[in-house]
Length: 256
Figure (cartoon, rainbow, N blue to C red):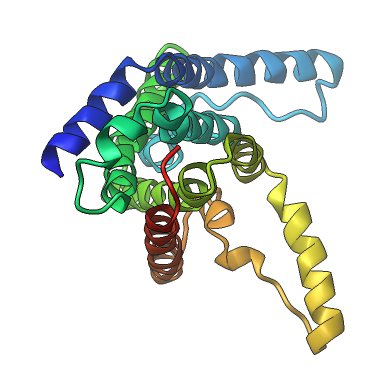
């Protein structure tokens, strides 16, 4: 199992999609503060009396607690989709599946290898934000830094639990197209509209007010300060359902 994880990590590190998406995340993070300043100055020139000034300072805790924007999350998920499907796309999986006591070990290996993948994206987003902010704002080391470090780790967990959903469709059902669509929907703020439609349908069936959005991992991930217990429970339930299901489905299918 250890050798399998090492092979997956090597394959991930050499993948062009991983490197390209990582570079794009860094560039987007690097440009976020300069772009904010440019837009503020533009708005100020058009409506000087109604536009707020560009903030000269920012708390370090704010940067640590929000390492990835929605677009960056989408890029991270697209990269993981490509990683999950790469060995099946190239036929490589047929060479190793027969050498393992259970084919599902290859699914578990890929999911474990996605941990450093997601850490790389989170740290890259954080580094880009810090470097892009330094020339334009004074960064204040505030007392909320330890709390924001916890939020950083919580968002890493939420990002990884979303990967469990993608794992089922991409690896076990062997459908990269659905994985790409899900990566876009879960990354960008689109699912909130879908959840709104689901809420409406559930309200008609059961009556009363229903809101499932606060319990969806992608929505919690985009919150500024996710509630600890709710985020941990949602992550545990999501991983507990989708990871074993992915392994079981893959075990029952023939490797092609």
